[in-house]
Length: 337
Length: 217
Image 1 (cartoon, one colour):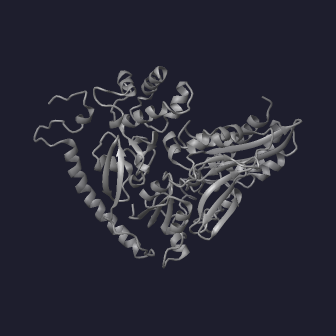
Image 2 (spheres, one colour):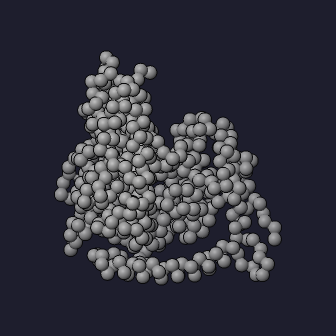
Image 3 (tube, chains in turn cyan, orange):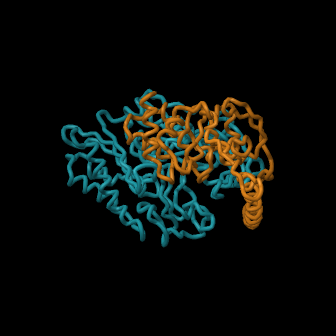
């Protein structure tokens, strides 16, 4: 692990000042040389592998951002340093955003969920083996060096949103549920505050797979908000993987659906394990809107979700797997109980 | 030499040898240091080659330390440590609490599980210097020979281990589990314990031990 200066921030202003441009440094240099440390479950792991080599680490785990509170408009505000375990078990989340609780509890282990935070989970990096191995080329880690995954071990990697530069999967479960609930991410820096819809937060790899999100240098995620749930909705997160627990998704689906008078009135679908980012499928949603729930329309929605899928040498199975995952999750959320 | 089976903390160190009284830990430490010296030389060469291309900022010199006051098992320790020191390396190498084990060192095996403010965490993925003011508990703070925690006694009774390397992490997880919102079934226990890997495969006995303690709790 490369040496670094460890600094502790006790409030957001302190954190954003420390994370801002340092004297003599450019914003670009600060972006790669400074990291905010919350739970550490991704960052320290990657620092040990020399994938992350920050020169300044700002400990933000004591920031007063660990609250989950109902908002006036009927939604919920989730602080950036809320632990994944606390969020998953929060009564408000369990009651009104069930798929988010299920997604969080399906991720990692009890120990890691006690450490990992909302903000950190949004910043989780890919598990692509070439990204994690500094002896390998990787366009995400060393732009322009190549992508060995495309002709190599790509069983766990993405089939949606890939480019000829990168096929890395976003590994998070939480982000998939947040996408289905149409979360907004709130960030702050020394330059001010802004809010970003989750769908706009993550970037496609394209020719610049090193850029994974729209955060600018020194910007700190302070909280996430979820809108008021549609009345009468049901939500579920289904995760398919190589073992029953403590494993990343091969394919997963979060569905939030409201059925009224036998018709699907409102539905949001997001996929995990198959996309380069948490994958909202508006194509599948469009097929389902206004339809009566049933196997045929679920299959049509699943087909629409993977229409643009690009299989690699080892991960073609994910296309059928995610289709069945979508159908099953739609069953769980729309069929009469 | 006879081993005192009630002192598992000693069994590591006090194996007799045929030729000289070199403890296993002392031997491994010396061999490890020699190995590390070779490794460090190679790593340094790589780092040097890379810094020639990478932009150089004001990274602190290796060897700079930071001060931290840690409360471990109710004892306060004032330490000057490299900021890179994980909580795991800190309790083992600085505080000589060898009950906490290093397995994968990447949060994948659970051998390093300790409690921070009553909650189980992977100590390998946490920087020691960030834990000032928090209550850290290691296996040494859970029970002692002659005064075992009920979970430790249950692991003994149910044979919840073979080689024992994962055991302190398993027990730290199991003790924390008692205060977590899991259901009563064996399936729930298996899910709750999935972050602790046992290569010997003592899982069924571990579940039995945990369920016995939960039923009595």
